[in-house]
Image 1: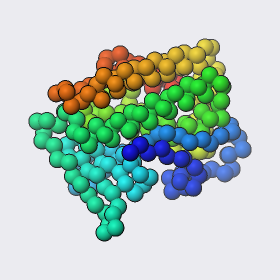
Image 2: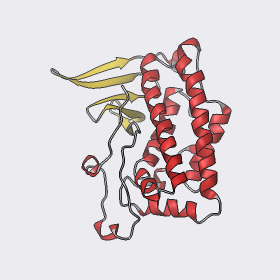
Image 3: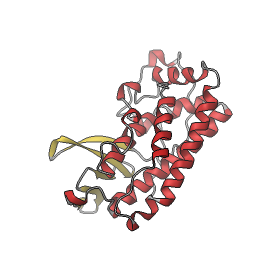
Length: 244
C-alpha cells in the first residue's frame, strides 16, 4: 500500500522549530500534497549501537523498521500493537526479502513522483513550491541514502558524496536554509536548467532500474544500483544542495 502523505502544519507541529519573528523575512511557501513516503533514521531499541530506518506505511501508526538483518512490521490491531519480524541470515542479508522489496518499491515510486513534480516546478519557476518541498525533501534524501545501504546491506550502495549531512537542512517551514538553497540556484547562470536536466536524467535512471531490477528481484541473487544511476544520483544531490 502506497502511502501519500499530506504534509501540513498540524502534522509537523511536534517536530518543527517555528521562528515567528523571522517568518516575514522568508520567501512564500505554497503547500501541496507531497507523495514522499515518510522516512526516519532511528536507534534500534534492542541494540543502541545500530540504526534502522522507519518507513511509514499508514501515517504514523503503521510502519516498517528496516535494518541490515531482521526487519519488523509494526501495525495497530484491535488487540494492541502487532510486531511481525522478518528474520534474515547474515549470509543472505544482501538479497532482498519480499517485505523489503515491497517497502522499497513504495519508497522508490514516491521518489520518482516527487522528482517529476520538482522538475515541473523548476520549469514553471514555482519557487514557492520548491521552498515548501525543501522543508521535507532533504530529510527524505538523508533517509533514502541510509535505507539503500540497509536494503542492500552495503555501506557503498550509494556514493558517500551523495550522503546528506543533516547540517544542510532544518525540519522546518521557516528555515533560512531553504531560502538560501533556492537563492543559490538562481544566482548562478544556467544552474536551474542544469538542475532540471540532471533531475530528468535521475527520473529516467530510477525508472529503468525499477523496471529491470527492483521488479525482478526474485529472479536475481542480488540487485544493486547501476553505475549510471549512482553517478546521476550523486550529481543530483550535489546540485540540489549547492555542493557542485
